Image 1 (cartoon, rainbow, N blue to C red):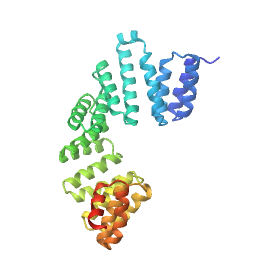
Image 2 (image 1 turned 120 degrees about the vertical axis):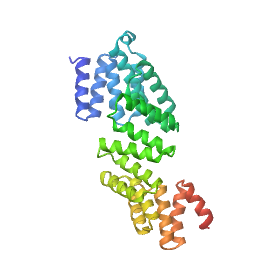
Image 3 (image 1 turned 135 degrees about the vertical axis):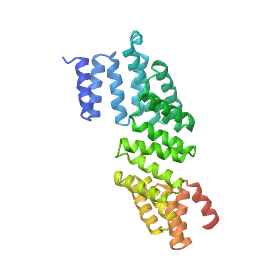
Image 4 (image 1 turned 90 degrees about the horizontal axis):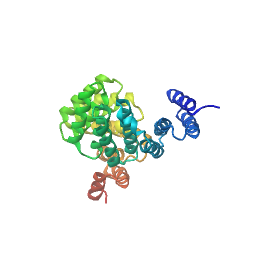
Length: 296
């Protein structure tokens, strides 16, 4: 008869191979053989997260937290493990847009282990989502102080700096993130956006080109480059990029907005209004205002 620990180890092996669904089946058997195998719940929660079953992941992490051996808290290893479980539950809650719950889990993780850089980084991201941008910067600063080698923390700090209109600071952080990870498509994209904010259009165009090269199915990158081409008077280029963005995501309101502006400028108002109406229908408020003013 296979033991709970053996099933658990099989599941971990499948996770290493990227077979998360298979891992879940093994963790199920591990838990069936020993319903008190807390680590099987933890790892099954991680596998569920990878399969986008975020609600199931939260459930498994919660069971692990509620049944954690309190004697383990007297050891550094035990405290570190529990802090990581709170962190993982926080990450899954974030995917469910439960940012307040995610924030509470990060706070608890830091109460248990106040030196975990990953928790500070994740809490900074959550504060960004809650539009507490200066708090996000503070947490990213702490994460970077504890571990200066995680490109994600520089990227997240750059996002928060851009929101408080520190565009140069944002560009500096994106640049560091890119130096750490030359394949970081989102960092190129957001650095391009910050360059547009500073009217450094040539730099922005180069960044958007690189973002698209790295992530050719990113509708935001195509739309951003299309919007910039409009600023530069290349309305045909705007239309081409927005066509590409809409091909990727037919519900992307901003792409219809940018394309509508370009068509209205290049051809005539009636042609542009077709796209502007579609953008307004999809919830773009700028498009709604233009439709009211020019398309009736």
